[in-house]
Every structure is written in C-alpha cells, then in structure tokens.
Image 1 (cartoon, rainbow, N blue to C red):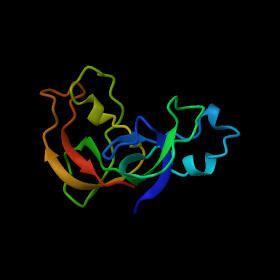
Image 2: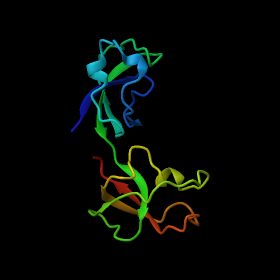
Image 3: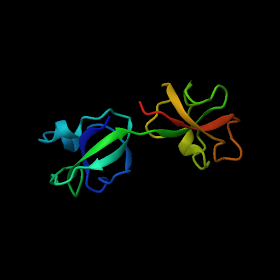
Length: 147
C-alpha cells in the first residue's frame, strides 16, 4: 500500500530508493511537517509515482524544494547466515562487520535493516559477492520483505 509524502525534487523520480531518517533540525516550524514526517524511521522506501500537477514547495532542507510522491516500503538485499535460509523463513543479520572494503559490506550492513530485528526472506539470490569472508561467516545473499 502506497503512502503520499513530500521529498526533495532531486529524489522525486519513480524507482528512487531512500531510507527515511526522520525529522531534521530545519523541519521545526514548517507548515508541511505533517505531509513530510509521515514515514517510519529507519525504513527503506521506493518512489512509485510522482504526483502530476503538484507544485514544488519551499523547504529548508532541500535546496530545490519538495514534491508530492507516492512511496512504498522497499525490499532490502542482504547477506544472512546460510543455515536455515530459505524463501518464506525469517532471518536476522549476522552482525556488524569492520571490513568496509569488502564487496559484501553493503549487504552485511544494509541500509534500512536493524541487526536486532527478524525479517522474512522473499528470495534467495545465492552466494554473496565476496570470495572470502574475513569473519569466517557462512552467508547467503537474499532479498528481505519490506516491513
């Protein structure tokens, strides 16, 4: 189910994904607060539609203003422990990884997912993009359902 919200005009394109981080300091006193601050903090969203004929509104946080868009929670590609990883099951992330240069790092610590929460697996993608896990973890790359 989609939600109408306001985002920066530079991001207002179908397919754009972002993680909502909540209210910024510049939002205080804004007349559009209730239309912008209506998403769940820490959740990854995908823009599904840009409202046509909607005017661009001034914004203290976005230099080119904001536009009305429709968004839906987005799936997240992540690396999870291989044991028990199959479509439809629930999983948690393995935990933080200090190896930021690893090609899998963005999947071991993906935006929009918490280490202490369980997520349902939508699809198994297979092996992660790294050749060797420096933490000696046995991982599978999966697509997690949106919350």
